[in-house]
Length: 314
Image 1 (cartoon, one colour):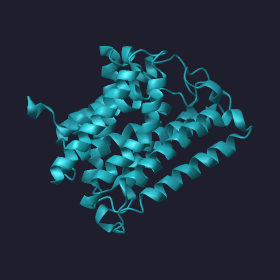
Image 2 (cartoon, helix red, strand yellow):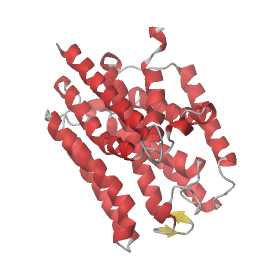
Image 3 (cartoon, one colour):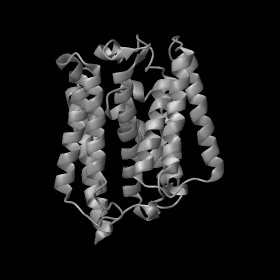
Image 4 (spheres, one colour):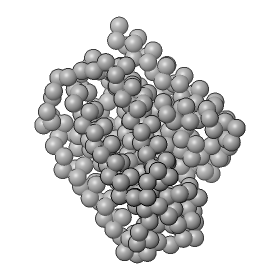
């Protein structure tokens, strides 16, 4: 039984659990519907495992993961769900009209690209590698399973495009989204290999990284959720979103994340980034029964991982 719980399977399940369940996008009653779960796992899980394998096989670091995560965000929201273009997409809210130009919701698109890059892809990969530190530099799946997951990802994307909503996006915008996805992937491939990146040797305190992660994620969600109600300029929100992402990237990549002493700090950074979503899950309990259990389970999982890391460090 223990052999069945592989790092790849953990990542396969973590990605939809964070990206859809913890976020409240798919509350428990919807998330654990067998058909919906199969589709979400096939989409998120396959994407996360494929990206993690590319990171290892290309000898890259988490900068490439973020770029590939951005490409995944375009695949899911632009090419599969078509929410970048559909003015009637259920979750748009104020962003259905705010920042919409040439039949594209640009503010929404930017928010979802960043969200999926960080929360749906990078954080689950970071957690899975923290749980299996001795395998973090190894491939977790073989070539056949890699191809199979790629086929699953493509199949779910096509199913979503055809049946999720009847909306059909304009061809030019849709093709530009596909091109942007390819360019993000190419940029990830062209980044310097892990051994060629600068090693600063800098380490950080877990409390500091937790606080920065919490503040950064809170600022991100508040910017895109409340921004349309505080300014009339979509360009201001988009510029601030890009600036926030750039500043967070600059801050995090000052540190030497390959240093073994940074293991607990990595967990603290991830926990801080998830803290806003955990808090939000508690507040959603009345609207979405079971979300408080999701939040408590997430906290328990992070604490168990913290304990595991401490025990292995002895």
